Image 1 (cartoon, rainbow, N blue to C red):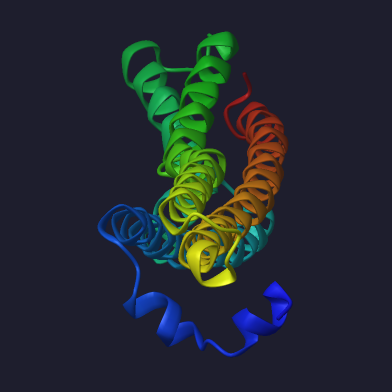
Image 2: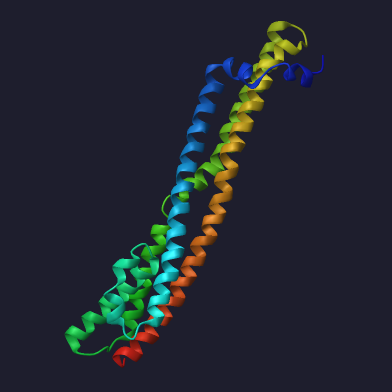
Length: 225
């Protein structure tokens, strides 16, 4: 009987319920990694969606405002917008200079404050991204370990049976295939979303850099710096 036909007679449940401790432990670890990565994916999808939506609304309000004080009074309406955090870093520095010196006298200091705000927001957006990268890179190797283990079991089965019997090698080969499949199932979505989220972070970072320039221009007009 061909090996493929032999496996066709077995359901996934038949293969799973007969898994031995090591392959079962490997699959358990991979399932945990997969659930963990999907939790991060769902959470960060919401974060990016809210950030982009609030950014658009805040930027519209910012460009319509007559002065920075007007915007500062309504920033609470756009709390999830990374641009608000950048705005607040810059505006606090302007307030400090106005209160101490009566005018905007150090534009470089405002620029540094804006960059600090951008850096802090990018760091927040990158939170948990290393975990996605870890799942994407480690899961295939964990699955490969299960593959190797299953092949070793298959050869041991051959040695025990004393002949090239399909029933002797089937358990080990089936374990190898299952662990490989689960490893790839955990790694592929994590790798895809790591790249997607990385692109969104770069996009939001560029938007914050552009906003910092707009803010500085607005501040110079508003305070005569």
